[in-house]
Length: 181
Image (cartoon, rainbow, N blue to C red; front, top):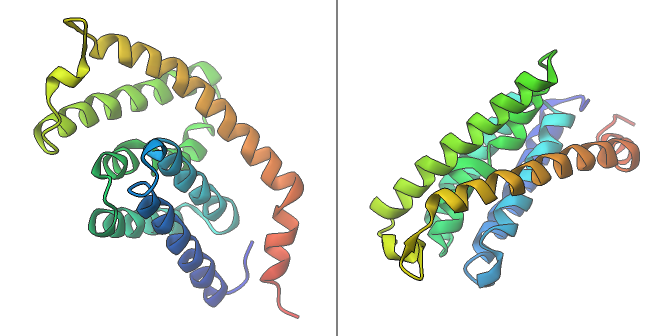
């Protein structure tokens, strides 16, 4: 755990800047629409582990606002705001449930709710034509959502692995940077 507020603010500021740069880069690297918002969300896990969830929520809000103002790829920003930004923070709370089955049900419910909301926001706020969800005349949002559930389960598993990797390899180094000498 970090010892003083100055260290906490410094770490949050650096990670806010890094997340915002990653979100800005979504406009520069077109294929990064999904990967860079996910990576930005992963960086918020560091704040959850080192400082706490309340600080991570503040960074999520700051990155969301800055991304809305600065990032060119609004679809990536929407994806970050609707799901990828807050899920790593929420994951820490969900995994405290005693029954793993309920945790997975809740995780899938959060994902599906966010994706459906994101779909309607992209169609009605970002004016992405509904025809872009059609292949060979077949309207496929349900298929995309089903495939997204499988990808989400892999993403959730990968996040858990990253948490373990962070604690085993980087936690001592990061927390050591902020200890009083």
